[in-house]
Image (cartoon, rainbow, N blue to C red; front, side, top):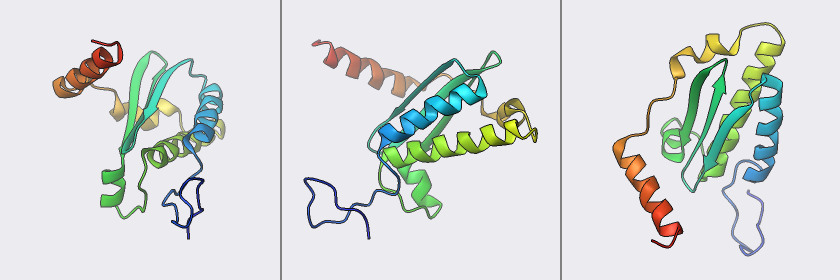
Length: 133
C-alpha cells in the first residue's frame, strides 16, 4: 500500500520512489563522483532524462513510464523514471570506483542524438508561450 500524500487523503499513492528533489541531490553527488561537470536533467509527468558530457562526449539517458510499464515495472510518474536513471548512474559510478569498468566502456553506444524535429518544435512552442508570446 502506498504512502498517503497531503491533499490526497484516503487514496494510496502509486509513487515507487522518494520525491524527485531527493534524486536531484543524489544526481549532483553522483556527477561529482564521476567527475562530470556538465550535465542537465529534467523530468515531467511521464518521462525523464539526464544528459552529461564525459571525457568530451555527450551522453543522454532517457526513460518513460510507458517503457517501464512495458517491461513490467509498476511506476506511474516521471519522477520515478528520474529516480531509476539516477540509481542506475549511481550503480555505474560504483563500478568505476571499484575498477570494474570505465564509464565510456559501458555507455559508448548511448551517445546523444539531436532532438527530433517534433520535440524541438514542442520545446520552442513551450518556450514562446512561457515568454508571453
